[in-house]
Amino acid sequence: MFSLKQITLYEIHLPLIEPFTISSGTQDIRRITLIEVLDNDGYTGWGECVASEYPNYSPETIDTSWIAIKQWIAPRVLGKTIAGPEEIFPFLQQDIRGHLMAKAAVEMACWELTAQKQTIPLSKLLGGTRTSVESGISLGIQKTPEDLLRKVKTAIDHGYRKIKIKIKPGSDIEYIRFIREELGMQSPLMVDANNAYTLNDADVFKEMDEFGLLMIEQPLAWDDLVRHAELQKQIKTPVCLDESITGIDRVEDMHKLGSGKIVNIKPGRVGGFASSIAIHDYCMKHNIPVWCGGMLESGVGRAHNVALASLPNFTIPGDISPSKRYWEKDIVDPEWEMNDGSMTVPLDKAGMGVEVDHDRIENLIVRKEEI
Ligand code: OSB
Ligand code: MG
Image (tube, rainbow, N blue to C red; front, side, top):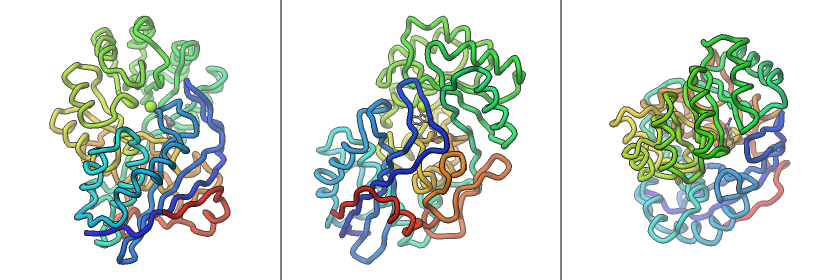
């Protein structure tokens, strides 16, 4: 049981080690919103809002989520007696439509606060069973197939267990064929289109069947299920949904319609941990594998993803890469490191298992608001 006394929002800017290009745009500096919740007993919990700067992944942005938290979400939760963090999402859903990333940021910080309060690891509080989670890498669209090959080779040398290649019309078949020709059929490759195609492009995906890809992530529109079902009927490679899955209902729809065979769970996209766990449990019951996606998180969001990915049905390596893949220096201590293609789930500390580097954050702040 807890009652929140204060919510603090921080915006920091962290330059990415290399620009990250998906079909709908490029990011080079990550604007990051961090959130710190404080309860009446003096416990705190950190979280991260994964919204992007520009609405090219979902309708939410850094700026809309800031307003949503400040004006609508914080006033609904501050001062309320809350029995447990699982109560927050259904409560917010009652009268606030959308703004799932904003809701998730608050909700996930409250799970962290609860883990701190109960002195148990966040992974345990969520129902995690793994001691380590397998890492994948998500490679942005490159200028040439040769550039991509170099990146893929380096990733394999580093030990990543899954390699995801971003694609868009014009940077697809030629790139994948080149990688398969040079490296053979063994490497665990998948592609992510971030909605860059329509059903008229079905032939492109039929052609991809010969490349033995693990899956094709979100080829069609960001809010579509019906057309994805049409596409999945025509191809052998499993379709994995990312953007289209905004909650448990959409997973049920996907399952009933046959829109995909694998689910990418990003807790921010679905409204937080309670929603993620519900999706995980449904998928486990129906033999649908899941994996944990990423949104170029700092070490805080990464800690939350690692804790979530420790649940049993996360059987496919996530987009969970070590800190050094993204940043010169992360904002947590210790930074996230990969050993033998995996990340260790911190099970020896209360909460998410890494300390927020307060001095570093102070130096990076571009805006801060106490609510
Ligand atoms: O579609 O999974 C995506 C990053 C920003 C927006 C959308 C996506 C991504 C990634 C990054 O693929 C994965 C990572 O955090 O390493
Ligand atoms: Mg994706």
